[in-house]
Image (cartoon, rainbow, N blue to C red; front, side):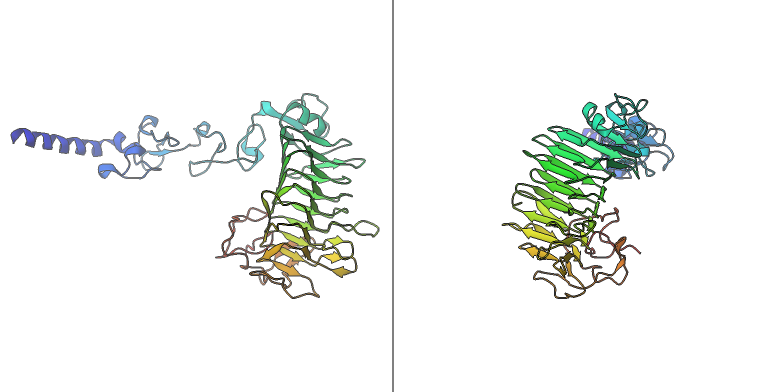
Length: 428
């Protein structure tokens, strides 16, 4: 009995020792055990980095609560890396969102900072051939030949296409950067198996027919926050592979907006597609806003877009012409006031529309489908501004089960209890 009492007393004393041991409670692995405060992300008090052993929380911040285990601090920013390279104000590692957050001035679309040695820099007035930061190139067509990451800084122009043939290329651009094709022709040509072009924050203009093209094999193109405008041809032509375009604007392209043909997969989410298919000097095209034909394989969705004021030839749907055997997901869009010849045809073919506002001033009968409307969306100032006014019928009218969490500008969806139709979420 004496021996048993001694063992029990020893265990109790050891437990008390642990809870009084500052380093023990500082280890997030022990947080909440035997009276230790904190949880897995805040392990209570610590006095040194050695007290912080939970992966990802290895820094002891002595400024908080007498010492708290965190991911990073202002003086320990190097603890952040990979796709979360930025130390935020709450001492957490986060993805980069601005080029200025990276020493290379190249924040990639996955949230990581590019290594400057892996970046080909392009600037107006450049003349180098290695495309380094110190000796930038003048032409993007040269840059894609030497590096897999290209950074465009400013307005550049050339009479050569950007060819991505069977390899992966990421092109990032400073705000306001523009690529102009002099003399016309294709601007971005993505082709053959293995081709994977990712372009963000770039304005593309001055092209002929088409401006961006996917062809041959199974190429991929991802366009994020791009502007494809004022081109003489079709904005985007995908004849094969997979296209993803998000938070972008495809506007005033005389040959039409987006054409997807046999074999192409697509995700068209959070975009404004307007003013396409209206050639200078009259005439009309077979492609208005979006034209689908034979695209029946894989992922296919058109969601949360504003497709307005496009034009097409007589009797052709100028908003979305959906000539496919198996309809894609088409939900939460605004398709409004698109002109076909001398009349108005907003949608055609056999897409199954849901939770969308589809119509024009002379047609206020909604198409068949759950949640559809046919009433003026009340834009702020079309065609320059397709934000919604506070009285818009599209407010809080999207699918209650919609999974898209931001709008074209990055505004969180929903702002109320339910998302808005179209590219823009109303934000007071």
